[in-house]
Each structure stands twice: as C-alpha cells, then as structure tokens.
Amino acid sequence: MAEVRLAKLPERIPVKLAISIMPDLHQRLQHYAAAYAEAYQSEEPLTERVPAMLAAFLDGDFARRRR
Image (cartoon, rainbow, N blue to C red; front, side, top):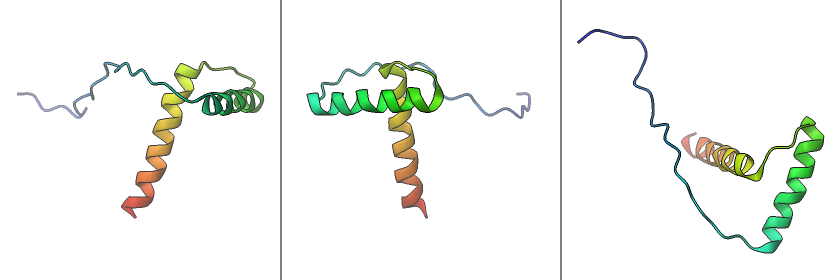
C-alpha cells in the first residue's frame, strides 16, 4: 500500500434531521436571522444557519470541557 500524507476523508453524506420547535424559539431564530443579515449584509437560510449554530455551540461547550 502506498504511503500518502492526506488522512482519510471524513464521512460527507449529510444526515437529514427533522425537528419541531416552539413558536418562541422560531421567533428568536428570526430575530437572530435579522441580526446576522445586518452584521454580514447577507441573508442565509435557516437550514444553513442552524447546523452552523449547533456546531459552534458544541465546539465551544466541548472545548471548555477538554481544558
């Protein structure tokens, strides 16, 4: 087997997840969308923002636990 420097690529097949949220959380996400659009002059769909928000939350939460 040939030696390669590139590590094996991670799984890249998205997993579809359907959730239901309460109306107050939906409203908070809408307010966040407006703040995001104002900050970056770019509107991103909820389906793009929520996975990024979850990843950032988990990265921050678990980074603190590793210390």
